[in-house]
Image (cartoon, rainbow, N blue to C red; front, side, top):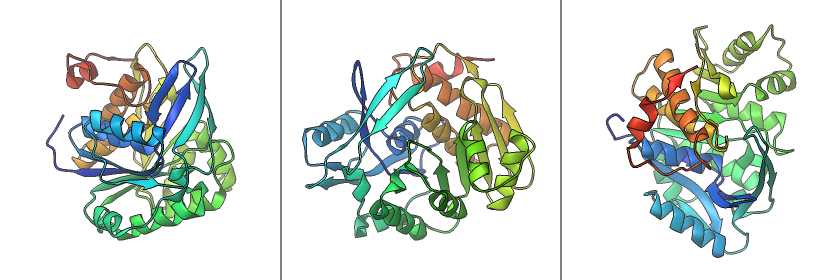
Length: 305
């Protein structure tokens, strides 16, 4: 999947998605780090779990998936995060996210300062910033990163857990912003950006916040990627039988960052991101196991729409 060597961090929530059929480990940053690791990078989860059964189970799952647990903090007061998930007939999830959990209280530590200084790319979201404690820690992590490294803001408009201030502040420090086609018009309205369609809106968002890339996912219809200097790439997506869409957007982001760090063109980045996102959508949960035939074969056997 390409040469190893890039250290990529998913910073924010790790949690258990509680499906009617059982629980699966997730959280956008954790999903992102897991897929980054599968693609041949050193994917690291920087998060926090409770000192409880679910926290121990999360650490065990990460170990089984080959993910380092060195940057997972333990919280003796707050429980491990959970989300109740219901999936409709089209595979679309609905979430009920528990509050006052361990990942709301990420702590800025000397260990995390060293991690930030050694990181090539980080992905952080809006959800984890719902609590001021974690929001402050995320900002310190971004400030401690080396100049020229990649900061990816993954918009995640869940329930009421976002504000205009969080969105603006995050875009001001990001290089890349990823959001979906339903989130884009909501954000443009919040930021009072008038637009003449999706592409125009994405271009204006990139220009307003001096963003290297704005990536808009379109579900099964692929994606749009634009740059601050008005370049665009669209991809139709890949045909797959959807198991559920949990983690597909996180996998898209991981594929995009993987290709971006290796100097890929917009078209190449779009294809890589859509390919990885479609594979995860064809599997259950956001951290699917690699098939026996290998990840590369699974990714190359899909057809474009």
